[in-house]
Structures are given as C-alpha cells and as structure tokens.
Length: 406
Image (cartoon, rainbow, N blue to C red; front, side):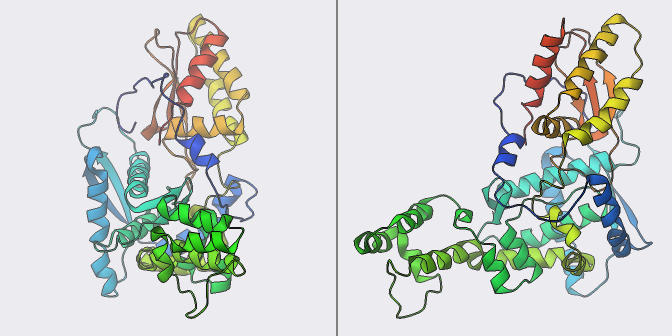
C-alpha cells in the first residue's frame, strides 16, 4: 500500500497471487540455507565487498502509477557509462512517492525503496517474461530498447541495497547467464518449461506419438514449422525412434536458443559493478534468482517476528485486550502458506528482504473495522477491533490474507 493511509482489504475477492505463485514453482534452487538469519549473515560480506566504502544517496520523487516508466528510464541511463568502462558508484535511492500523505514517511527510505523495486519487478514480469509461476523465461524479440539490461542493473542495485532479488528465473536460463557448460544447462531443461500455446499443442502431439504415422502427422502440421529452426542435424529424419532426442532439441530451442539475445542483455545488466563475477563464485546468491523453498518465509519466522510485538502491545480497553488475544491465537496457528500470505500482507513482499525488516503492530483506530489492514511501506499491521468473538476474528483475518494480490 506504500505511503497511503490504510485501506480495508476486500474480503470477498478471489483467492489469487502468492498462493498460486508458490504452487506453480517448477524448479527450485538447491543452496543449503539453514535459516534466513544465517543466509543474511553469509551473503553480507560479498555485498559489502562490491559496494565498498562509497555510496551515493539519491533523492527521488516518483509517481507510483508510473514506477515502471521512471525506473526503466533511470536504469537505461546507466547503460552508456557501462559501455565506456567507467566504474559506477553504488547508489542508494531514497524514495518519496508523489501525491502521498506527507505525514507518513519512512525514516531511512528503505520501505519505499523496497516497494519501488518490488512494483518495478512485478511489472517487468508482466511485460517482459512468460512462463508459469516462478519459472519465468524472457520473452523473445524484446531487446530493441535494452529493457533486459536495465532490469539486470535494477536487480543488482536492489540486492546491493539489501532489499530484494528476482527469484523468478527458469533455472536453465540462470545457468546460461552464469556461463555454465552446455551439458549443465541441458540437464536443467524440462519440456514443461515451454510456454503454453499453439506450439505446446504440437509438442504434446510429438510427445504422445506412439506410432510412426502419429509422429509423421505431428511434425507435418503447419504449427510445426518451428522444427526448421531448432538445430536438428541436417539429413536426419525425425522418427519415433529419435523422438526423445527431438524433444530435447525442441526444449532447448524454446527455453534457451530462441532467447539468447534477451539472456545476453540480462547478463550484461547483471554484470553491473562486476556483480556477475560475484554470483558465479558464490552459490549463496542463487536463491535470489531461482526460487528456493529454503530461502523463503516460514511460519516460525513470522511467529518470531510478531509474537513479541503482540505481547508488548499496549492495551487500554477490554476491546483491545480481546483483539490482542484473538490475534495471538491466529498467529500461533499459522501454517507455512498462511505465514507467507501474512508476510506479503504486511510488507508487500513475497520473499524475505536481504536486510532484516522490522515489523510494527497497532490497533485500528476505527473500532467498527472487522478486517485487518496494513501499511506496507512501514511494515505495519493494524488489528481490527470490531469482531465480536474469536470465530469472527479468524474469519475476517484469513479472508483479508487470502485476498493478497501480486
């Protein structure tokens, strides 16, 4: 919600967003991370080494409705100095959203900055990528304006500022960015990585072919003309016998080869401030690009954050004491998915930031409010006071959480 007065979440909306995003994740990073705290401690020295002791604080006023345009222009502006070989100074933006309530502010700018990055990344996913859930591929033929290079620079800046990564990339794409061998990249490929559409229907027919006639029919369709571009050895027939080899060529073409220009642009952007060399040498960075259940929000993490705040929450009335007790019951009962939804509800983020966040809990001043609200730039949760009993509190609490939107 950024720097706006809290607004009541719509409890009647459909369940969507993070829940589906998590379920759709197809490939996971496999970096051993015992917990978020140890991960942050492990990654910090590498970040500090890149940023050094020089930092440029940049004050920016941004129209929240035009974050994509603002950010894209800003990061494209950083490309030319990269080409000249100039060593950039790490920038730390301090964001003010225009048209917002001036009485609400974030003392260090990090809350607004995280929202700036988060909204920009989500819009990049919508415009520049395709795929399922956290298994995203850069769209083909989108390199004319250097958008992917700009995105790469933005990701580097967000990580170096301790805010958020971009844990949405297909694993094979990430390995290609790192310059891994063809064998390593190909071992990461999966036919389900091919985006759905007319092409997928043809691929499915090839995959399901049981006879030579079915195979011939599948590869002879008009929609199968892409087979001319996949690098299949000249003079070798496509038959039932070599079907699996053909499917491998098809997968590699649609996931990697067709998108090489876009992958190369993203790679250039990620080399901002020499960052690419760091992530090549340090596998701890992988969960910031390829989704990992190990580096994600857990119920235990959220409970550790909120339970002490609820215990210390000042209560002046019986209504407040009742709401405090009801909130404790809900937090204590969190499962893993609910915890991730609650974290997103409070912070606007779907993954833990690199630098630890601070939560705040208050009672809603409107005693008739039945649903929890949040002020995401300040990581602040407002507890409702209008529920008559614990059942009503639970009902409204979960209804609000499950309406979290990307």
